[in-house]
Image (cartoon, rainbow, N blue to C red; front, side):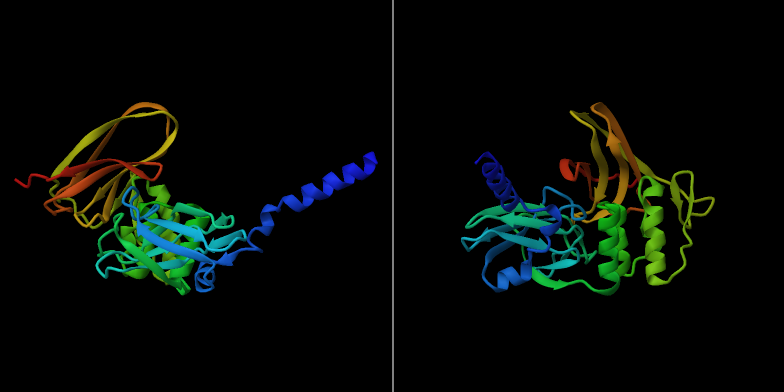
Length: 291
């Protein structure tokens, strides 16, 4: 009898657990789940995170009594209902488990595929679009593989979608962008001619170029080691430059300095944002003096 009890308990444990590598096998693509009315889907913008990190919030409701596993694929596109707001490509595949009649709200990783449209806010709604193909699919997969959820990663997407020059794929730490830039150059079959010297991407500046810099600093206390970025955004909430980046900022109080050249960035207003682990913590409006 004791042996039979052990066997019975063992069978229960085996049937109650699902190996992780089987989760994908039993999943259903989000478009199929919506089409078969298994789930209700609502997608809105997320202005608590920049457009290159987790720009969307997905809300899912299971309309059935059965558990479903929803697969949001890397490369899935979401189209804004406002043509002046950015469309977004998913840059990290998601597997979301929903029990019967359960619901969930979850931010997802993604990036803008229209550089000159405005970034979404909480009120902006999205609908499912197609899955990316060709070069756009390739760069989305590369960003997921390298975990390049960064300004350099966003500029890599724009090199594909907006025909940006390779020298736009830069970051505060040049080594973070070198591999991405080389990948895009190979993907688009164009030469990588950007030269990196002394921690700065050297553009065609000339020896006598005049500089007019403005800057400031943020003081912030970190309770744990954090990924910290200072990003510079324009009035459309589109990132234009990375001013600071440290993926391993230790716990404690830090004073983080930044500066930029007003000749290169001539707009009247910029927003300087302290971004911690992908979340905007401080948003400072700056109107540089031009004289």
